[in-house]
Image (cartoon, rainbow, N blue to C red; front, side, top):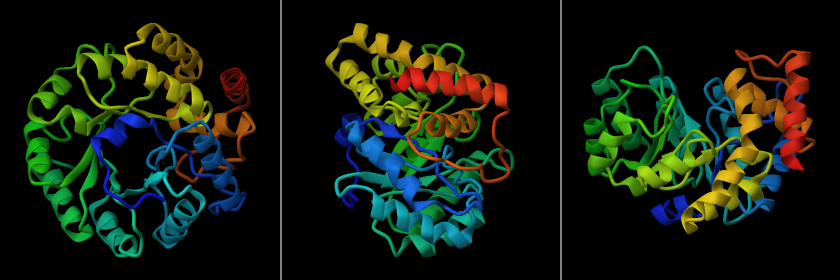
Length: 301
C-alpha cells in the first residue's frame, strides 16, 4: 500500500475506484472476497481505492474499524493508494483518529453529514479532525449548502485538504454554478469528479478538474481506465463511446440506488461475493437484481 502523500499527478493517472465492502452471511467483513474485488480492480490498471459510500463506511462499527483497515492494507498491492473514510458524525471521526494512528494511510476521506450541519460548523469539524489526525484529509462535497466555495478555499489554503471529491449531481453537469465558483478559488488540480463516468468528460474538459471516481470501475476497471486515458489524450470520441458502455448500469444505479446496485453488480458479475448489506441498507428485489445482473454481465463482457 502506498504511504507517500497524494499528488495532483496521481489523481489524474488512475481512476479512483470506490468499491463495495464484502461481508459474509453473519455481516462480518470477508477478507477473501474483498481481496478478490481489490485484485480485479488492480488487474485493470487502476491503482487508487477509495472506501466510502459504496463500502457503507457511514455505518461501519467502531469495533470492526481496525479489522477493516487491516484487510485493506494487507490485501492491496504495494503501489496501490488506499483511502478509507471517517465519520460522518463528528464524534465518530474524532475517535477514529486513535485507530488511524496505527496505520500509514497518506490520507483519509471525511464523509459528509447531511442535515445537522452549518458551513462554519463543518469547517471547524474538518479542521479539528485534521489537527488530531496529523495529515491533510479528503474533503467530500456532496450536498448543496454543505460548504461554501470560499470556506473550502480557506481549508485548502491552510494546508488541510489532500484533495476534493466533488459529487453534487446536476441535471446538466455543464451547468454548475457551484463548481464554477469553486474552481475560481481552489486549484482545479485538487478537485476530482465524484459521480462516475457519466459527467466525467464534461467535468474534466469544461471545468478542467483532475480525474474521476467510479463505482462501475469495479466491474470493468480496464475500460474505465481507458476512458480516463482517452480524455487526457483528447480522444473524446473514444471517451464518449466508453461512457455510453457504462451507461446502462449507471442508469440502474440512478433509478434504484447507487450503493445497492453496485453491491449486486459486483456479485452477480461473478467478481466476488459481496454478501448481505450492512443495515440500514437492504438488498434488491428479484426483478431489479435480474436487471442489474444483465447489465453487469454485459459490461464485464
